[in-house]
Image (cartoon, rainbow, N blue to C red):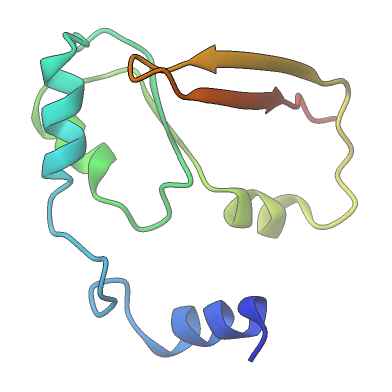
Length: 108
């Protein structure tokens, strides 16, 4: 079974709480956010959040400037013909020394 077909089957036959990776609370993420000192006024975006409870947990802890971005949801809203207006590439190094590359795509 191809990967896309596999995941489409999972997401259409199981509820978000019936998958093996479901957690009722994003405890590990919350712990990390709080340990590094991110305050409740910080802008936080949950990328690829899907059915994650992270945003709910952040709200419960007083965080207010929150966004969630899920590429599949965006594609569903905009369809396959959306067009980037421009793109900016950024590179970040994590505290653990891992290099992460990001491409920012404002859409038309």
